[in-house]
Length: 147
Image (cartoon, rainbow, N blue to C red; front, top):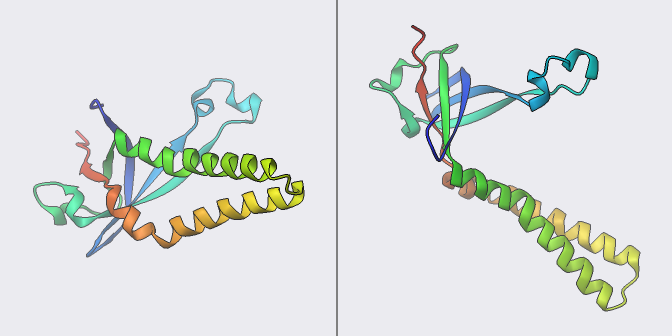
């Protein structure tokens, strides 16, 4: 694994002229535990990553086939940016609104509804601008040698 890069092994599940869709199996730390059968908290999820054609790393960009094993990379700094966008900013918005409205002696029900509404608005705006945000988060993909 390269320093400063997040890597995940995946499998090509769809190819189009614009790019490909890669299926990555995400496992929690519990999934590798020897006692996962007894615990019941093991967690594995399938995630799909859309990768644009210009982000393919291969001598021949048309050499990818459905079922190929690939490595998907993203810069670690982009992962931290995603954490800020999804966790830190909404938390700051929530706490700021809660404290500000509480200081104005607004009813608790109104404070709660306003805070939840502000977070909903924030995520709605993220949804609207997902295309613009998506251009900042670039994944690269290359084939894994199956030797």
